[in-house]
Figure 1: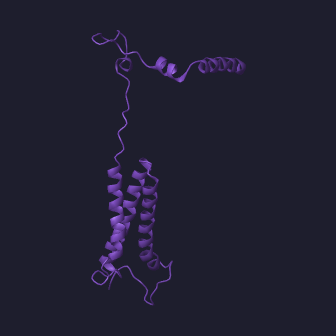
Figure 2: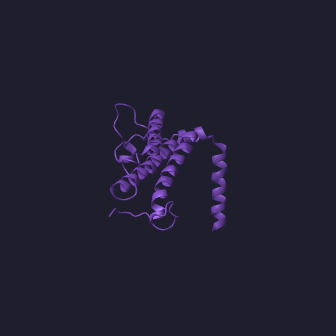
Figure 3: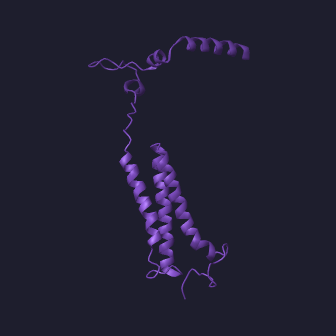
Length: 162
């Protein structure tokens, strides 16, 4: 029984090899009814509907670079966090700082997805670097508090202020 299938498939392969791709695509396209004529009776919804045409949008590179600039501004801005006014030793300010680090990581992911979709390698590399920077900034505050990293001072960092 399998030999019959092998013969049939070989015959189909020969037929496909003898036809160009363009002719094959034209042969498989559904025939649209002439303008002003109704679909033949008994034709289902699939036969009456025109084939879906996927229109490609032109790439909006400015949107990609706007997202990248936003993520880069956040990544640079966190280096200028006013530690003398908003100490990140503990409490609400620590959680705001960690939220800012999470925002940087999220913005890096957001621009990485867009740069991947728009096939922009330099923007994608920069987006991944921004994402890693956000993770490093957050980890520098979280790891000493969970006991994984050695704190830089003699004081053990805490989550909440007393």
